[in-house]
Image (cartoon, rainbow over all chains, first blue to last red; front, side, top):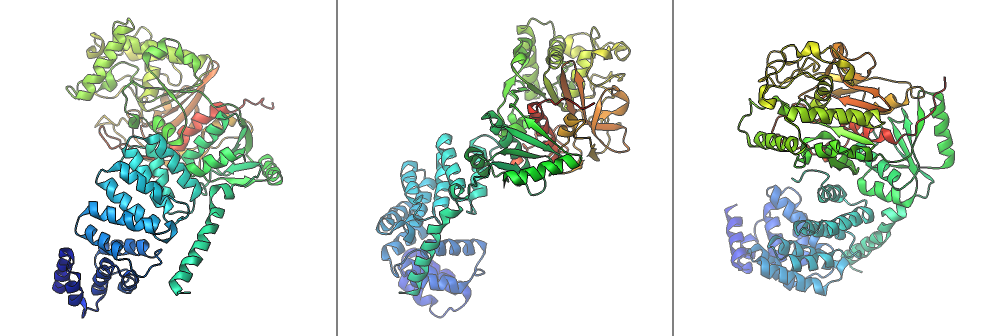
Length: 208
Length: 429
């Protein structure tokens, strides 16, 4: 437990080699989960996926498990085994440097086809920018992520974009986008959320 | 080929097929869409909006009374299918042969098909700054996506009601006593604003007091019904509308409202022939008690007389002989939990004999949901404030109908909105 905390501190300081060596002997599921993050930050996509899967769904607390699932969703469409630039961008995110992280993610996304990770990376970068209030850049990246070539990502991107438009007081555009999401991806798990947003955009339910 | 690459290509192939699941590909070209209203329906409330909007586009529709809890038949065009998909309303494509079978079934039982002709033009009586979340009908209309306009005293007295088919009243106090909250909530900002707004309106319309002005509004509303309008009222608007109509030349308002005390013999002097639903009620004389009369069975604001909530049962009517009453009780539940309002229910002893009871609490001395005719029009009164907020207190969080898409109480409200669209049928005698 203490060893993992220290290793995580080394990760955040940017010394991935030292963190990795500390985790070498830790074969617990929590250890595998952290080891997966270190692999990811080193750009070892295949190694990260392998360790995240080995860690399973119960390592760490609920937030850890959710984050691990999100990492897997982000990485699995990527065909390359290694992507050092993606590792760097994700490390910046771990270190709290959202601006650098989003810029790095956008650069990597530009190198990948939408269905092979490009859309997912644009979606993450767009969400980061939206959270920091850089709405114009966020909108550009989220629109790029709505590519129908990546139908697994597009509904989430359209929902995030609709959220951004609503918060920018552009409900008309948001309504069109949400309708498109519902009609184009009726099997998506996000359809109930899209309907909820649509109701909010139209003033049909109170805002929560 | 590496395993991951193979999996990725296979996934891409599957995704390429996924448009087959999208709306445009799933859209069935069946000539009709059945909107079931039984438990398979995913959003009962929005189904009414779907039917309303189809009528608005000039489409033909039918209401299958008592068939699958009041199903609708809509045209199977692309626009209606798209609207249903966006709203999340369950629809079932129906071919002509299947429709013929359904019609045969309708003929054989206590069921009927009522053509829906044109969407009613809806008005909601509410002050200009009324919050949309404090009126069950406004909430239901907003959620279902049914258009409406707001009217208040100046529009009612300015003859604007002639331009509407359907009028809704909610918790307005037509006795002009500010819901009798004047003394108990003295100084509350919302009450101060309500009093100021009403006084300003009465002055601007040339009335000496708010009670006098509200009585004139009540008379105008009764005139709207007499000329053929459809009136739907809930909560305290039901009771106070009739009290204001019957109080012709009788002072039923406390001195804080009009400067003179209430006539202590008001109950005996009321002219009940002018009222729509009630007769022989005893008026509450205390200005501090937020109760108007013994019309309300539950007396929610009277600590000594308050009755607990039970549940109310919808009556069954003959669909072929009494289609209007049947339309008003279409529901997927027969027994519905009760809910309070300033007027929660209507005591049986104060109902006029001509009143049709649509729902009551069996064994209790009150009923919940009533209907009647007045001149060329009809009125429907539904006691209580919010079907999904049984205790409703001032300042409560607004009800979010997306959490109650199957609300049987709200369905009753929406039955009322749609029934004016029904084509009148000649009865077989």
